[in-house]
Image (cartoon, rainbow, N blue to C red; front, top):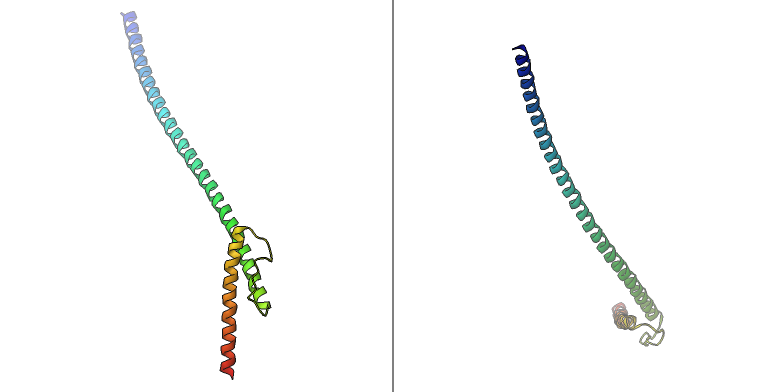
Length: 141
């Protein structure tokens, strides 16, 4: 009787403890699954960020290569402009600016082609200046 009641109370307490333990285990399992899901999402985000960084790095290298190419072209263009100005100056300082400067300085083939183009242009400009000067003299007289 009292022992049975105490035993029944003890069994009841154990059942409740078991139920509580089951609830706690289920809750811990759900939390564990949720943590695994969050960790998986975080890993995916880190991988995406890493891929974006790798893409950015390759774009940076590509931009650097383009910049180097453009700077080399700028240097080449500056050299060509300098040579053109030198030719124009040499033609304008000469009285008979029709002489060919091809033998004045050895150049590589690209520079030689550009020099010849500039020489033709300079000759044309010189001829136009002479023509304009003659017309001005005619208009003044």
